[in-house]
Length: 353
Ligand SMILES: Nc1nc2c(ncn2[C@@H]2O[C@H](COP(=O)(O)OP(=O)(O)OP(=O)(O)O)[C@@H](O)[C@H]2O)c(=O)[nH]1
Ligand SMILES: [Mg+2]
Image (cartoon, rainbow, N blue to C red; front, side):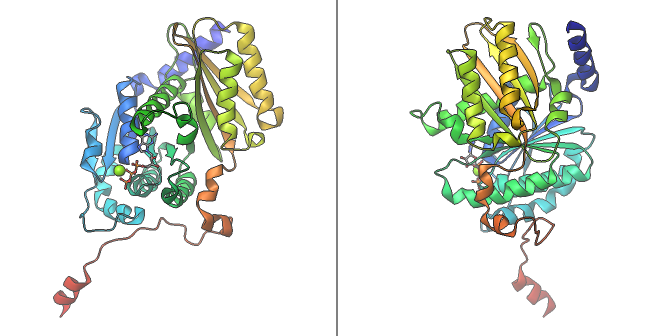
């Protein structure tokens, strides 16, 4: 057991010396904010890049590269129009992505910037033959006006990316219903950052880990992956049940094909508890037949945290956010991304006339 663990650690380190070749892009307000948390966590990623149409989004961290996709304030802010403006920045985007092996693209969908730029960035990254993992925070239930753009963007991003991790802001919000929305975002972003850190970073010290290679292999398949994080001072069983409940609110458990469970313990989790938890998860998802990768670290005095990433879901509850795609099922009207460009017909007319 010890030997196998050391061997996988060795492979992960070999594949990823100090995160070389790994790039993380934060897109729009939510994406830049989540990226700043991740950046601050010290995760070994070679390049952090903040991209938005709004300058203030680029200031969440004093570090990292920044790309402002500046558009005229008189122009439409529809996602397709933001994408149209981004066409002028394609050389800079290719330069950012050059030499990348893995690209994490993080955004909140539903607004114009994340929904507009994320599918475009995924498309450019895939043309450069890198592995693209998109990590998407979905709008709250009450943000109904954002659901359509979120649904369309989610479908486009799923089609283009190697893997898509969906995060339900609502399920994480339920942990602190009385807090202000900005405090809730800080809490959620912290949880996302801890979860990615634990799942991706090779294990060190008193840890059993998963590492980037296994992480990518596990989620790189058809369908969606769903991330949930549950914290509690109760038992291991309770904290895992909380994480499982959050996943089941979003997707059908029978459809899951793989799962990763990471437990941050208070130093008191027994081998028996770990074995039971992993076995229960395996029998709960995917009609009782899925493979569960697991990781553990000890942080005394912190209570218990269960990070669960289940993958292989053919759909999620967010499919309903794009009713047109639901009606058309698998029929694609246009394979390419809808992109609006601004043409000044008045000036064209004057030039010709
Ligand atoms: N997890 C998380 N979600 C956020 C955060 N900020 C906003 N969101 C959610 O992400 C979705 C997209 O919002 P924004 O990121 O603000 O939108 P945008 O891409 O900047 O686009 P615009 O609204 O046009 O500026 C919304 O539904 C928000 O609820 C954040 O810091 N963390
Ligand atoms: Mg914004």
